[in-house]
Length: 157
Image: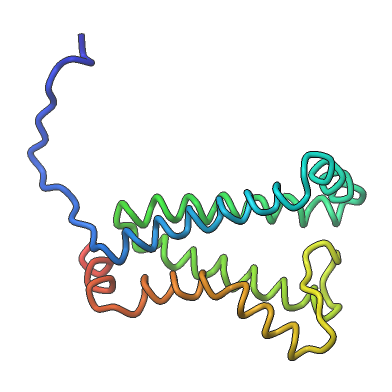
C-alpha cells in the first residue's frame, strides 16, 4: 500500500517568509469575503437575477466570464505565491491593474456594463471610492513587492 509508506524527501523545504504567506492568505480571504458579501447582499434570488442580467448580450457575458476568470487567476496566484513562484506576484499585479482600470473606466462611463461600476457624483468621489475598495489589494501588493525579505525570496526562487 503506497498510502501508508513513509516518503523521504532529500531536498530542502521551501522557507516562505511570513509576509509572503500573509499576502497569499490575504488574497484568498479577500476574494472569499468579497463573494460572501455579494451573496449576502443579493441573496439567492438576487444572484440568479445578476447572472441572468449578465448573460443578456455577448458583451455582458464576456465581461461576466472575464471577471470570474480574474478571480480564479488571483486565487491561483495566491497558491503559487506560497510555493515561491515569482511570476505569480507579477500576474497578480497585472490582474489588479486590469480590474482597477476597468472599474475606473466603467465608473466614469467608458466601460460596459454598469453592473461593474462604482457609483459617485464626480470623478473625484468615484476615484476615492475606488481607492478605498482596492486598498486591501494595494496592501497585498505592498507586502509582495516592497519588503526586502519578500524581494529576496522571489529573487532566489
